[in-house]
Image (cartoon, rainbow, N blue to C red; front, side, top):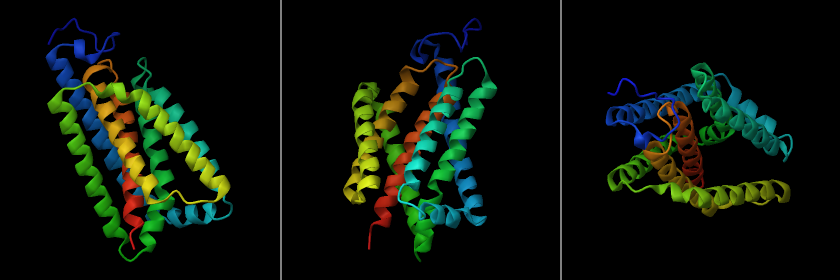
Length: 236
């Protein structure tokens, strides 16, 4: 490795030496795996402590409760991303990733609790996790084997997310269900987001930004899992 190379210097990872690029990808996916593992552990502990039922009870007090939860999650997500992208402080980067992982575990509580009410709840959660895992592996393989830069999808993904957010807010105020077709559309949208993030990891992040890259990819994977689980739960 070039000893004079600065991993925090301005410039995409694609311009870094091969060993640095390989190390960046390894670190990013190690952090993604760590975030997924921490999320699963936190979710298990919170459910075992009874917070899942408490979350369902809280959301049942008002139809606008979920709107407040989403608003708080968006604020926390913005803050976590800002901290994770702080190249000047590794401590702040990891604080951002930990904060976001905890926020994801909290926002998943009512959905997981609702799934566990069903007799086949554990099996459904496991099936959704397996399907999500295979989708992520397949999309990652596509991005790495084709070597195509999918970051051109960024604009379309942003528009799709704004439309989805608008529909979610409208459904809360107007009281209609978005249904399985919306969940399917969100899975497709998150598939595009995973391709986008994988390409960004390969070509566009700076070598010292593996924590921010891991957070971004983890966010897409978690959202995909949410909607895959919703699709499984919609089955009779």
